[in-house]
Image (cartoon, rainbow, N blue to C red; front, top):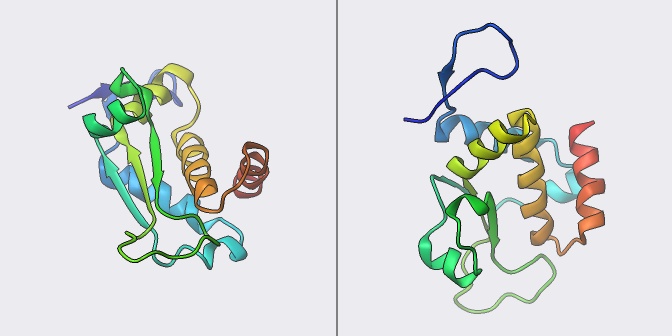
Length: 141
């Protein structure tokens, strides 16, 4: 099990890293803060928290380091015609890379998860990077 220091409270004893369930709870909280026009299009969205991305995904994306991918959206963006055989839209969060980034950057974990979730949801809506930043500001304010 990954063991990290509590970065927010100097002098506190170290604690175990957040579990998949705790990461999922933070992600669901971030999703709940999205403005209603966005939330209305998330009813069939699936959310998975996994330790790492599948090696085949990393290879396909030409990512050599499994710590190099914190989240991934898969599915057909809103507004594109549905095709027979389409899988539901899915957001994958990768726990170990998220925890490493959290420790390395010092960004509060809830803010980091919100950033990644909003970025992946942005793909669901076909948003530009600038639009994703605006949406993230709306969720974190």
